[in-house]
Length: 61
Length: 536
View 1: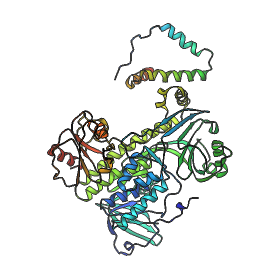
View 2: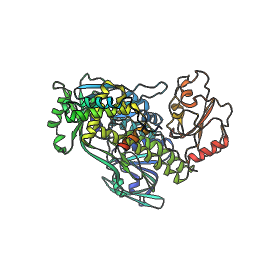
View 3: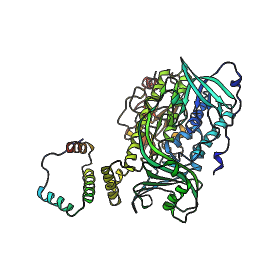
View 4: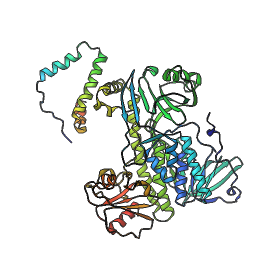
C-alpha cells in the first residue's frame, strides 16, 4: 500500500510538458489517442502499486 | 460424423419402480447424466451412498463442447478412477501464441511445475470424458455399487414436501413417481429443474455472437493454443485455434452483434470463414458447429431446500477460460463428501449450506475472470478498444504488458474463503497450502504423489511430527499420513507445506481442500477442527 505522490516531483516540468506535446505533433486524433493509451499503460506499470493507481484513476475522474 | 454420438449407452429399460402402486423412495436422485451428473454418481457410489440417475437422453452429449480439462479436474478424476484414461487420451499442451492483426505479438508457456503428477491442462472432447465416466460407473454398478441409471426418462415435476423431494418421471411407457431425500440437478445451462423451481440466473449476457466449429483435418498446425485479436481473416473480431485428439481442431470465431444465427451456422457460410482462416487448400470436414453468446451468470443460491444445483444448471461462464465443465466437476467434489457425511449421520443437514457458500464463491470468481476476459476480447466501447489495442501493441516488444493481455485466464481452483468450517491459519507456513486451498500435489522421494495418497476420507498429514494419536473419536474415517522432511528429502513437500518451519500438521478434507494446519499435534485442537469442518 503506498500513497500516490501528489507533491511536485518532476525533475524538469517544462521539459516534460514540451516533450509530451511534441510527441503528439502532427498525429491524427486516433493516433494521438493510441499514443496516450500506450503511455498510460507504460506509466501504470512503472507505478505498479494497485492502491496508488486506483488513487490516480479516482483523482483523474 | 463421429459414431460415438449415435451409440445408445443407457437405453430405456422398464424399471420395477414403474409397476409399484406407491412412489419408491431413494436416498439421492441425480437429474442429468452429463459430466457433472456422472461424476457425482461415481463419487457417491464410491462412498457407498445409493444413487439413481435420471436422464432424458440415452447418449453422450452431441458435439465436443467442453474441450479443456484443467489439472484440478484431472486430480478429482484420479480420485474417481478415470484420471489415467483422460490423460492418456487427451492432448497435452503448454505453448500459447497470441496474434494481433498480421503478426504474432508473443507466446507463453504453461511450464509444468515439478512435483505435480498432472499437467496444467489436457484437451479432450467432452464426449470422451462422458464415455469414460459412464464406463467407470458401469464397472462400479457391476461390482455391486448402489447405482441405477434410467435413460429416456424426463423429470416433469419437482415437488418438495417436508424432508422429501417428489419427482414425476416421464418415460416412453408413461409416467411414474419416485421420491428422494436429496436431488442433485445437473441438467445443464437450460436446466428444466431450475425452471420448475421458478429460479433464474442473475448476471450478464453479452451481445457478441461466437461461431464454434470443430473440424477434422490433416494439418501440421502444432499442438498449441493460438489466439488472434483482430486478424486479417476476421477483421475487427477474434479467433481461436486449439487442437483435440484424433485430428479434431476447435475453431472459435467471433462474429459480432446482430447476426442471423441460423444463416451463420449453415455450412455454406461456415466453410468460407474457415478457409479464410486455415488456408484455401486445407481439406477439412466439419464435425460440429454451434453459435453462442457469452454469459456470465449464476443462480442466487445453489441450494433450494433439498434440491441442489451443480454445474451449468447453477452457473454459466463464457468459454476461453476452461471454467464450465471444470467448475462443475469441482462442484461435485465439494458436494458429494458433504452429502455422504450427512447421509451417514456424521454431519448435520444444515452443513450443506457450506456447499452453497463455497461454490457460489467459486462461481463468482469464475464469473469475474470470464467477464474480464470477455471485456478484453470484445471491447464494448471505443475507449476499451483503444486500451486493448495499446496493450497488444506494447506486448509485442515489452514483457511488462503481457500480464494485461487477456484471451482467457486459465482455470485454477478457488481458495475457499475463511469460515467456521476452516481453522484459523498459522501464517508462518507456506501460503499456497493455507486453509481453504485445494491441497497442492507433491512428490515423495519414493516417487509416489501426495494427492494419490489422500483417498476419500479426511486425512491428517503429519510432517516431522514424531508422536501423534492415530485414533480420534470423530465419527468420520480418518487417514493418517506421516512424512519426514530433512535437508533435500521430499523437497516439494517441504516447499509447499513446511517452508522454514520444522514440523507441521495438516487436516485435509475429503475434497482435498485444507481445513486447518498447525505446527504441533494437539489432539483436542484437531478434534475440534474436524467437528468444525463438518459443521458440528
